[in-house]
Amino acid sequence: MSKKFYITTAIDYTNSSPHLGHLYEKICADCIARWHRLLGEDVFFLTGTDEHGQKVENAALKLGKKTKQFVDSIVEEFKKLCKVYNISNDYFIRTTDPQHEEFCKEIFKKVYDKGEIYKGEYSGYYCTGCERFYTDKELINGECPVHKRKVEWVNEESYFFKMSKYQDRILKFLEENKDFIIPEFRRKEIINRVKQGLKDLSISRTSFKWGIPLPIDDKHVIYVWFDALLNYLSALKGREKNWPADIHVIGKDILWFHAVIWPSILMAAGYELPKKIFVHGFINVKGEKLSKTAGIIVDPFILAEKYPVDAIRYFLLREIPSGEDGNFSEDDLKSRLNNELANDLGNLVRRIVAMINKYFDGVVEGEIDEDLIKKSDIFDKVNKEMLNLHLNKALEIIWGFVKECNVYINDKAPWKIGKSLGFSKFNEKRSFSSKEKDKEKLASILVTAAEALRRICIYLEPFIPSSVEKIRKQFGFKKEMFADLDKVVKSVKVGKAEILFKKAE
Ligand SMILES: [Zn+2]
Image (tube, rainbow, N blue to C red; front, side):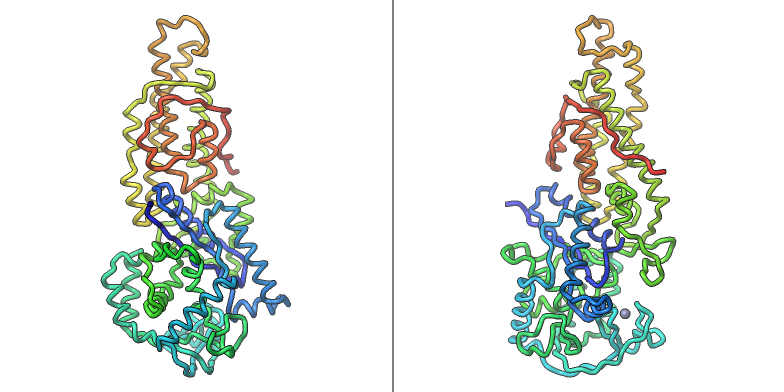
């Protein structure tokens, strides 16, 4: 049986439409999921929506909509985002799914029955934007550090999870598992914070109704984070063997919930802990954080109308250093589209297909030139970067080979050989005895380039899947896995040359 691989994105909060940050996270997770499928692993890739909480209730109220009706419309947008950008998730979980709600109640009850939940009273500064309490120390000028607006002093009856009890176990786990959080420096940040002490966690609310009622007290609903984190387990109904998650892909703003709160809940409920948390940075536009209030927004749907989806995927995966903040600009996107995708890759494909058609009527067989093919031996290097979640570096190495192919074709100049042979089609029955060697040489160059492209297709599929499909169609290549890199294909039959990427103005 093949190795299982379970990867998740964070579930998106349904108080507003998808933005570039949501898209980036999904594309990263999709690329990793596709990579592991090509390794032959049994991949389960989960994404979804986080639909409860006061912020959602308020957003619906503002539009005069019923809360469920409001979240349904936002969920459709997130599902559309996945479709438009070719996200290969195996399942889409909604926290309003009955399956999820039942599971949350079950876990709550289980942890409660173990004596790990007690009733108390909570008072503190609460930001409805963040759905969380802040301590005096965390506030900046009395305001929420994220939303930069006033927090409320809230006093309410609440159930508490005994998280403080888990401090030593969490600390030990974080210290022993050096690659639990990627990038590494974020683990150190979390360790320092845990060392300052864990408090018990308020996990129920009475101030609003839009949530899952507690199985033991229906005056309360489950705190949205306790509810949301459990999606990673509730989604596995019927395929529990996928647990633990191999990778949770999340943004840096929610690391505390995933690296401390989530493991504590899992320990209390008797589950294994996830293996890895991959923390991506934020995307800035002209050095500024994406922000609706500041008007810095990039609508992923509008973007997909202006540029090929694969160009956007390629840009984000190549340009944003994995685990760090990065910059988005349309100028940079265009430049990568024109120079790398259209020129380096698109032109290469078009030239090879056109020459095979012109000189060999579309069918060519020949000897492989090892000089070029040897250079495609990058699997170990690229795979290492992918397993370390350096997606941009992996893509850079693959692109290095695309460039090698261009150098090869330019050096060998097959069109010159073709010209010296009088543009004749070799497959026609004529005498070429004196030129037989040149014909073989030309065939060898084109077959070698085609074989290089077959391998490039395998490497690039996780990054630009629909373009790879287009290349394969032109060359008659089947969908392949990494195991197929070892094959050597010495003959090829091409179709019509098609433009892979149109340049942007
Ligand atoms: Zn806030």
